[in-house]
Amino acid sequence: MTTVNVMRKRSDRVMPNMRFQFDYWLLLAIAGLLVVGMLMVYSTTFDYGILFKDEATYYIKRQAVAMLLGLAAIVVIMQFDYHLLRRFSVPFLAFTLVALFFLLFFGEAIFGARRGLMEGSYQPSEVAKLTTILYISHWLSTKGERIKKLTYGLIPFSIITGVVCALIVRQPDLSTAVLIALVSFTLFFVAGADWRQFGLAGLLGGTAFTFLVLTLPHARNRVDDFTVTLRDPEQAGWHVRQSLIALGRGGWTGVGLGESTQKFGPLPAAHTDGVFAVLGEELGLLGALFVIGLLALLVWRGVRAAQQARDSYGFLLALGITCWLAYQALINIAVITAVIPFTGIPLPFLSYGGSSLLFSLIGAGILLNISRDAAMSRRIQPPMPQPVKKA
Picture 1 (cartoon, rainbow, N blue to C red):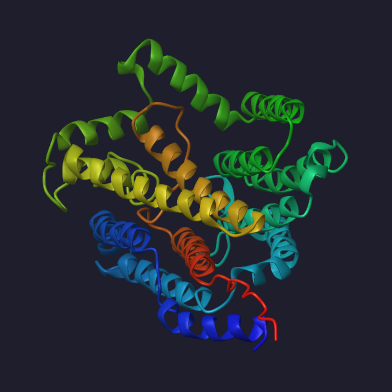
Picture 2: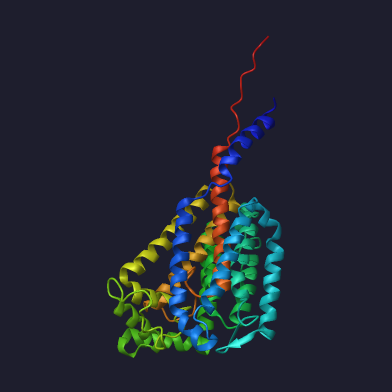
């Protein structure tokens, strides 16, 4: 019997047992975040539903649809080898760029920004977070040591990332552009860029960010408000003050699920950017720490999946998705706790928003796929060669 046939028979014995093999810690983190997220979405939107849609469950139903679509996407993703995504990374990114460009002219302006289509239910910037990671991971995994060369590494990397970020900044949405740049920059460094490129990329990125902050009025105002807050906390901006009031009211155990008062007007965007403040008010410091623990568990399992991936593409893809979710959660929580200047970015799995939840779940599904693939590759080992017996 040939070696190939032996391996096929061994894989046939393993696959039925491995077909539904999951990283159960990662599943636990995702499930916990979804449960808390749905509770917080209903708590922060039932009054909006009554006031604007004459139905308390209007928004939670929309969020539930996005969640079900995301869970269905996970089931589909688990049916194929994640390496298949390589073939579609270029068309996915091209489609995203077209959607971002289309949005600038035909998007619906809300509070001065064009970020969504179809009444805001489709946000191309949320898609861009995932498709950029898919493309960058594929591109970097094919370069090898050539990534250290300027013409193969920093220059094309800067063009790819710069085009995506520039289209998002034009909405304007500086926070999402910074998030994508940070994740891409992390992957570029981990993929093998030398320290000179690392330093030059950091200098270029920092210069571009400083220029945008100084030239975009809303960004400049938020930085000015933050510096004022550092000198005198009582002069903090309205959003920051209301977030801190909500966290302070919560104490250790919170005022009770659904009992927040800040969400009824004083706290802007309580169901999206400010959901962590409402969480702290209703569930207290212990509830906030519980959610942070679930996010930390997700990050730990994501990094572990990256470390155990059987090739560089799987490693970069898993690490990119993990950094995306981790950085986004970190930025949101830092804003709510007044650690960094205010910026609008949703908390993964908890904030209201169909596009954000759907693509966060798709990213989590890819992590589960990579983790299972690593487990299968460890169990399916080629047979040891047998010595040939002499006649």
